Image (cartoon, rainbow, N blue to C red; front, side, top):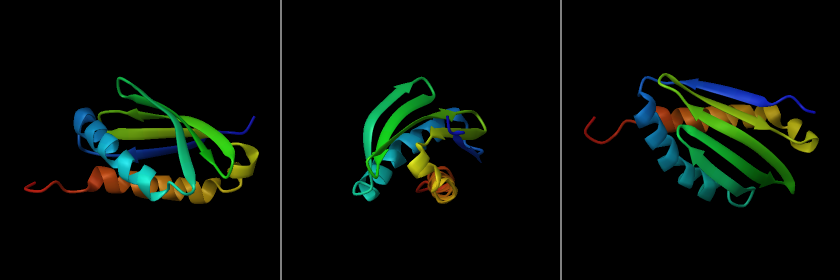
Length: 107
């Protein structure tokens, strides 16, 4: 079984604000990557998101956990996508950082 891809993104927003921003940002991410990635399942349970996606006809699954000071994303990739893990890790980190660091209007 392949090793999971794990990305941890620190933040100073607190759990509730980080979760709100992640939820708001996921819609934009899904729209931007709709031609490449299909979200098959997205289930929030407290501060944890369990998801299943299809990319390049390959299924991957994972979790996203929101904590007071960081967001942890863990994705188990099939062997075909595992070769792209380095690029995926950088893209995940960059998108999550944008969601968590974006200044709110009037802030």
